[in-house]
Image (cartoon, rainbow, N blue to C red; front, side):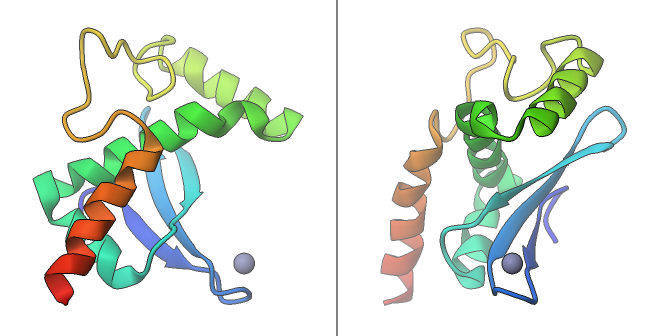
Length: 120
Ligand SMILES: [Zn+2]
């Protein structure tokens, strides 16, 4: 699949999860529930070398990680420390390194709609 990003299907409930391993050494992986189908994922992955999907995944983490369970929040805090509280999508300096395609996770709908329109 496209650069360090893939879609995984849960065999039990059919949920599609977007899987991204983050630095350092791709040792911290996060699954975010993909709200559309596989075909839509593939189409959006073609934009900017999957950059749209990476920005969406990072934005989703940034917006939602505080609502996870306490042990998961602790694990994320360890990851943030390992990335010097900057090289991760939660702490990144967006003023200095702005996203190219979207600034909040909900903006993925714009890209999804474009792919749906294309296939009509
Ligand atoms: Zn499941």
